[in-house]
Image 1 (cartoon, rainbow, N blue to C red):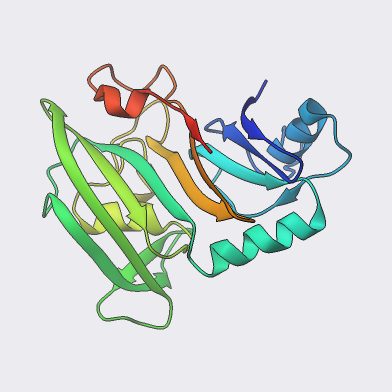
Image 2 (tube, rainbow, N blue to C red):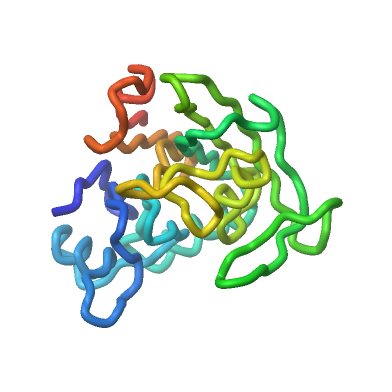
Length: 215
């Protein structure tokens, strides 16, 4: 059962579990169908996407007009997104900016190139050690490219724990979580957080363990 983080007449925010696809996959559950049944609505509209192994806040529209308005905000990059990630590798730098062009690589992966490129990806981040050989990263993507954060972490020489596609140490899940989404809608300001599941280590600072909805 999905956790409904917030709902009004135009949209709902749900906590997407890791390992659940947003769209239909043959023989597998998909989040849109699960959420529509749980919210008791005939249809939902995606306003953005999360990769199948990524967990966290997913914003779904309840009507076509809201879907259009919210999707436009994502396209215009006015949505403020904050992700959390773990790595067991020391980063090339502890905070700053990761910027470059995104290009397709091998086996469904992407890579970051020097310069702005035609498919520019920009990510702000800072990190802190939370245990021996374990570091928490707070990631704020300024663009919305496929695998952007996973590629940024690889570029820092700190692939995400569980992200074997990008050289990360195998783990029970990909430790990437869409923790907070902040935006404005028709004159109101919204801030929605998704809680961390029990597979995240207890050393995570309490600041990131107090999910809330701000209206």
